[in-house]
Length: 91
Ligand code: SF4
Picture 1 (cartoon, helix red, strand yellow):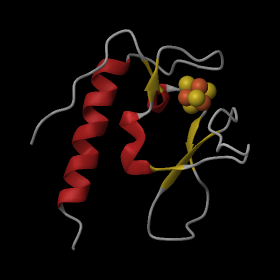
Picture 2: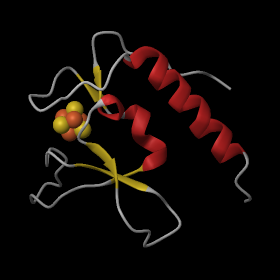
Picture 3: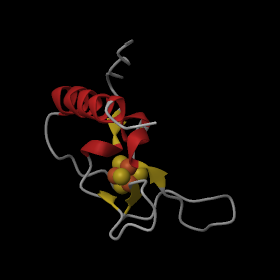
Picture 4: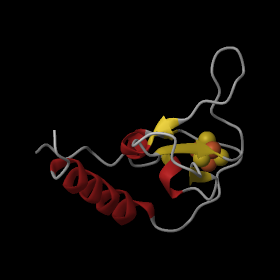
């Protein structure tokens, strides 16, 4: 499987204190939210994302970013565990 590049110089929401799993499971799909309220829909409502997209949430900067540590290895391991998890999911 093609490994996505780590974007040097970008910040990853997955490595931010504010990126959290949504409490409670309303469906069988885990979702994440930004507790700093940065993820919004066009009309201003909060936007949440599927957990499996977490490593794709990165940007040039965020004023509320709170670094949780070294991100290169963390993002790599997170991608690996997500890929392993989805490959074992029954279709
Ligand atoms: S505060 Fe910024 S970096 Fe942190 S999760 Fe929200 S959008 Fe991402």
